[in-house]
Image (cartoon, rainbow, N blue to C red; front, side, top):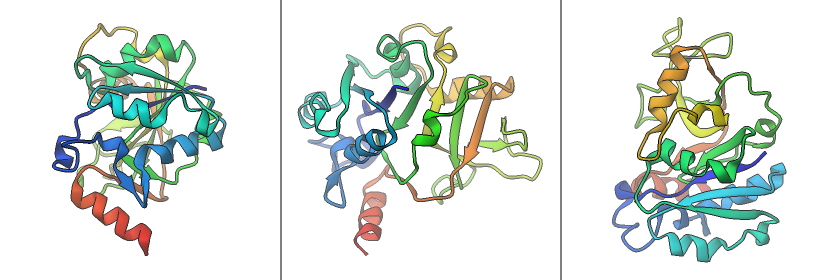
Length: 224
């Protein structure tokens, strides 16, 4: 299974740290954030990784190269203008191919083991990894039914979860798109309403590193 790392964003909430550097290259415990993903993907058995780039794209490509340091083959999907999450994946479909592929956002730090997702038998359009709602997103994104399907709003127990920015996707999920800006959340809502998207809950280490404060918090925790 191929994997895609979403790394094109401007990191505006991370200013001023991203004024001269893209967010995926910010240091977490002395290592660029995106390198943790590359190491974990290689350990899980992934060989081909696609990274979409836009903001300071040259820095990312110089830092990571062709991926041989990790035993990976890295390809880059250059976005002349920002295409958002779904639009960026749609543009990269020629590199990703027709088989299901793994997606992870560059701005999370986690110990999630990708090996299980590589073996996941996708029965719908996507399978998402969910986490407990962090303090900055208490409303969550979706509910999770006993059947494993995601639902819009809370589940019958009144519970919601937050998407961990990790999942397996079918190319068919993007079949009706056209080139341009499009967010994944729009596609998630449509698929969830149709019962075509499943999920699992991960209760291990996971951080959404979206602001300088959260980056500082994660670095403090890892240094303890």
